Length: 159
Image (cartoon, rainbow, N blue to C red):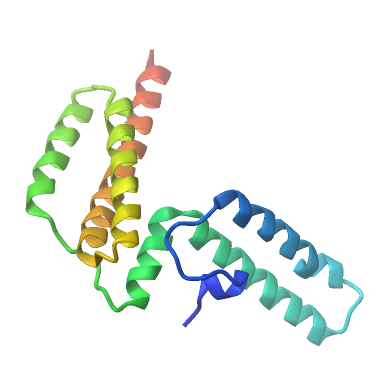
């Protein structure tokens, strides 16, 4: 199984210094980028391409708190949450308000921050069930934020 933490030599922890990750990514990318191997043998080019691809995939997963959390839960054998009836009511209310043209940016960003904090706490406390719930809810909040931006930009462009 592909392990993004292993690619960077990091321990498997949810808490991650994203600035350090980015710095390490660019350092490693300089060493493995296929352009550096343009005059090398085919085997060396293939190896560089494989390493660069793995580095890019690992960076994408580790940089995103949702993907990082999802990976860590999967490694533990924890299945993603498939539904949360209580939260679904909130989602439906937010969708109704979005469709009515209400700007929910601030409210959704506050909810996102709360859920990110809950997710971090759940991992610190090794509470997989709370992590599952927070990840599920955070996925919906992020989608709603995108929908809110799309609706807001559509309204502005039509004026």
